Image 1: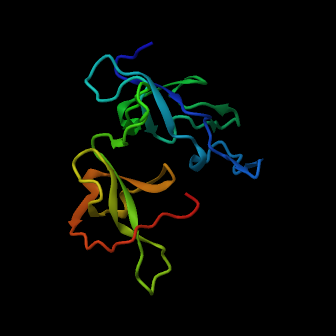
Image 2: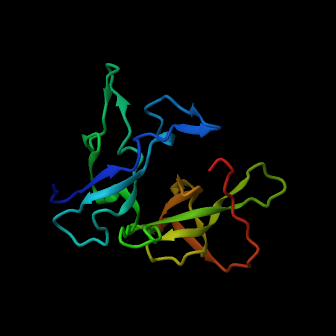
Length: 201
């Protein structure tokens, strides 16, 4: 099964990440289908578009937009799937709905390669706020590059427009997806900067 212009993917695990195991007991964190914070964003590539040349291959893992697997209710209260839905294990997405990808090599003991951002994006971990007169725990406009599409170096210290950030939790790190065009400045690192990653991540 292949599409001319779209990727075909399958979710890694369930469509929602709203359960947590605590001492062998299942705790349901959320029951609202429309809450994007608990929607799964991990998927595996089933097939790539026939048109175009991509670094992504079938079997690779990707991070997708939160609306891909999310359900919603229409004005009649009927539960619906997203427009990406084909069946419970198959979804059709466009390139701009994929934000991160990593190569999966099933023949190697090192199965997963490093995450790499799709063109136009980077992922930033904010700095801890060192302003003693502020209640904010993080700096809203300054952080360290964690994943890049190659435009910025990993661990580079940058400033960004706060309105451009969008929250993701990747491998227990809470990061902001930021458009490259909203990176406003590069800083020289002093080496003593502290990043902020909340404990719940």
